[in-house]
Structures are given as C-alpha cells and as structure tokens.
View (spheres, rainbow, N blue to C red):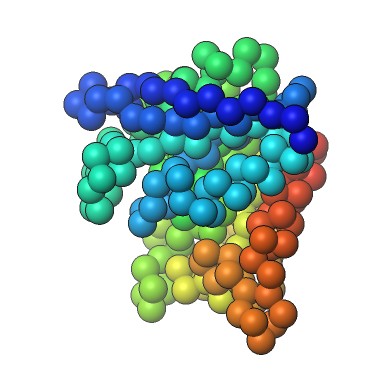
Length: 228
C-alpha cells in the first residue's frame, strides 16, 4: 500500500529533552497508532518495524518513538513518570501531525503498559483524544512471578482496550489475565495467539511463521478498530 514515511523529533519531557519518532502514513488512514516500544529494544527493532508496516497495509498509520533512555543508548528504562510523560508527549505530537485522524495508542509490553498507566491518571492531560489502547503482550508480571498487580490501574482506563497475547507468554499467565479482562467488561477484548511467546514467536514444532503472526496481529487491530 502507498505510504509516506517521515522522521520527527519531539520533546519527551522538560528534564529528558527530545526523542526521535518515525511516522508512517498510508493513503487515507483509518487511525494513527501511537506505538511505544518494549523495555529491551527501541523503535527500530524488527518487531516494531514489521508491525508498523503491516498496520500500514491495514490502513493504519503509526507513530513509533523512542523513550529517552533508548534515545541515549542506555539499557535501563527511565523512571515510570518519565516514561508516562513521554507517552503523553508522543500523543500530543501525533495530534499535531494527524489532523482529524482518530488516535489509538499502546505498544509492545512495557510500552503498552506505560500507555495505559498514562491514560489511567485522570489528573494529567494529554490522553483525552485517544480512542483506544492496544497491548502487544501486556506484561502482567515478571517471569516466574505470577501476579496481577500490574493490571490494577486498568479499571481506571476509560477507553476500549485490545489485549493481543500468546499462550506461551512468560510475562502473562492467561489464567490470571482472563479474570482481569472479565472484570473490565465491555472495555476489554482478548485475542489469543496459540503457541506464541511474549515476542509472538512460534516454535518450529508448531509450524510457526513469525511474519504471518505479525500480519494476523495487525489485521486484528484493524478489525477491532472498526467497532470502537
């Protein structure tokens, strides 16, 4: 599909300075998805690039961006307040660029969680125009430490949420996540990829094709978006 790609810069927070972003605009986009990366890799990671491309095929624009620590080539994530402020700043940058294109937000693992945390804080501005949040693997707990504490804030999120999860995800025991989603009611949709891990990798024993999985995820985002 025909698309335009632009590099942008925006201020993440007063203390953190500028970060980079990459905007992909297909022709006549249905949404602009503000796409945050996970803890271990920046906006140019294979997953981020591929999913952004497949979303463009579905008519969804993306603005993927770095958090300040990845912009500075550091390994340890910034404190949560800086991460959340970066999310808000990215949404504001998207709104300046998007015109009247409806905004979605979310991301891979930590990026999705920080987006929902930003949206759950009613005392902060910047997320009001977001129509829905997409999680590419919600990190419900640390590996081997089942818990649902990281999901407690989701009840305060007032927009629809799409949870894209693999059955082998060591950061999200589905037996713990499913009750969380049930509690959220009509606000939450769960889409499961059988056999996928936290990176949505499928083992060869299951006949896995990672690119086909990522295409499937992008297609699901497009389908879900029609109903919100």
